[in-house]
Every structure is written in structure tokens, then in C-alpha cells.
Image (cartoon, rainbow, N blue to C red; front, top):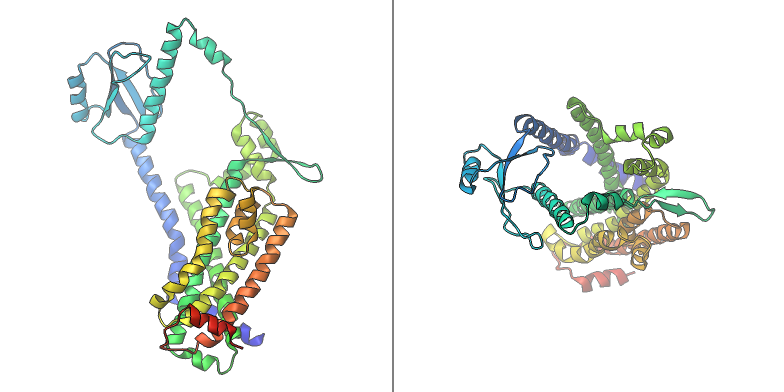
Length: 435
């Protein structure tokens, strides 16, 4: 055990003390707040200089009236089509909307002119406004008062309540659960790929420099592999925690400079029973905040840490074995594909099955099988997972880690000392069967 701790300490300190580690760790968190600051500055500048965008409307039927909204102001005139197009070409108008006399049962011929490609939001706004107006005109022609129709329309909001075995009621919201499952699942996926590759690169470098031959003279190959996996994983966790702290701190400064509030601050101010009830029963934001307020973040965080570490250890053993079996990164490509297939399946399954329906049979098996459970289970955990499912998944992940470590150890102890030999799957199988 002491030898494994020495390897962990060596792997951890040798990487943490590198200037490249310090630069990446300190500079990476500055990228996101810097990008945010640039976009906020551009948005504020755009709001100040181009606050109103005037769109000329020529309506030949004089039946359409569009209300100004957001940054768009509509002006109506009797200009000819060519005169209005000239205004756009000269920069006097942001755009020109031409509405000919149309058949309300089959509206066509409406054209929007602009010297810039219109945004999706603007086109959608114009289409929605015209659609509502055409519907009102058709109702009026049919002898039906549009105001009567509007008075009969109503919005229906269904509140989702989850019942546990004890009969306790808990408000849920699929949007909140989707976002949490998405973020945690993707973080685990990215972490496994980045630091798994670091393990493989580190083993290949030491094997190529023949340092391994010196190390195995005083420590068993399995202990060396395990220490390397844990040591590099600890580096990744350290870097990850520093990123979280720095991103939060720097983003708070940037957002505060522009006179805004962090979403976390807004949630803390509003996510309390008094503020929620003050927002009213019909407020969608009140329901979302109540859901956030009721989430057991401690349980969710502990689940995330377990699968975060468990998934890394399971795949880290494979990456170490691949590094020991080859002499260069190019040779490792043939072995990387089978290892990354389960990760890709878990990544795709997270979006296609788990987040869409966390209680389906496919979601269950994706969250139980050790090779896909670290990513898939986090998608289910945000919605709430039965204790049996969670315990079974965790137990199988531990067994999976032990199995992959044993399997990788048999490859590692032989492959780490083999140089200049073309390794294939038959060779790996022979190493695994060797006593």
C-alpha cells in the first residue's frame, strides 16, 4: 500500500508542479468570463447604438396593423414598392414588409426586404403577428367576434407531483431535471475522455523512455498502474475544483461590473417559501424555483462524485492497459475504438432515451451496466431513482472497476516491458490468459 501511495504522490506532484498545469488551470477559467464579458459589452453597445430598428410596412389592403415590440418599430406609409426598397438600400430603414391584397383563405405574396439576412426571431415574430391578424379577419368575415374567441381561450398548466413510498408529495419539473441530468452527464463524459487519455499518454512516454524498466524493479506492475490511475485522477479533480471556484469568482466580477446578478444569487433570493408564494400560483418561475428549492442537492452531489470517480477508475484501467501495450499514440488507435464505444453509446443514450424517459427499460439498463452507468445514471438521478436501482448500479460499477483493473493489470504487467512488437487483439488475449 505504501508503494501505491508513493506512486500516487509522484504522479500528482510531477503534474501539479508543471508550469503547463498552472497555466492551463489558471487561464482556462478566464476564457468563459472573458467571452461572456465581450458578448455583454457587444450586446450593451448594440442596445445603445441600434436600440430601434425601423421596419417600413406597405399594406395595400390597409387591414394589417403590427404593434411595435422589443427593438422593432413598424411604420406604415403609402409608398410604392420601389420607393420603400430604396429606403432599405440607403439605410434609412432596417427592413421593408410588403403586404399585397391577399386571399385570407390562402395568404401568399407577402415579402420582407432587408439588406441583411433577417434573424430567425424576427421572421418568426413577423409570421406570428400576421398569422394572428389573418385569423382575426377570417373570424370577423365569418360573423364571429374575435374578442369572443379570445375570451373563451384559456391556458392550462399541469403541476407534476411525485409520490414516494411513504406517500410524501414532491413537486417536480422536467425542465429542471433535464438540465441537471444533461450537465452532470456531460461533465463525466468529458472528464473520462480527457484524463483517460492523459493516463495513456503518460504510460506511453514512460515506456518509450525506459523509465518503466527501473520502476518495475522495485514495485509490482499492478501497483504502478493503480497508483498512476489514482494519481492522475487526483490531478484532474484538483484542476476541476479550481476551475469551479475561479469560474464562479471571475464570472461574479464580470456580471457585477455590468450591473447584473448571478443566476445563483437570484435563485437564493427567490427560492424560499415566502418569495415563492408572493409570486403567485400561476407563475411558472415560482414553480421552477420551488422545484430547485426542494431538490436534495447533497444526495445529488454525492451520487455525482461516486459516478464521477467510479467511471474514471473503470475506464482509466483500460487506458493504462492500452498505453502499456503500444509504443506510440498512433498504435493505440486500434484499441481506443472498442473502449470508447460504450462511452459513445452512453452519451447518445443520455439524450435519446434517459433524459426523455428516465423510467424506460432502455434507460434502466443503460444506468445499470457498468460501462454506461456513470453517464446514464446521472441523467436518471436528477429525476429521482429508486433505491434498489441506485444500489444495484453502484454495486455493479464497483465490481466492474475491480474486473477492468484485474483485466488491465494482466495486460499491463507484460505489455509494459515489451518493445518493438506489433501487438494485436490475439496478443492481448494471450497476455490475459498468461499466469
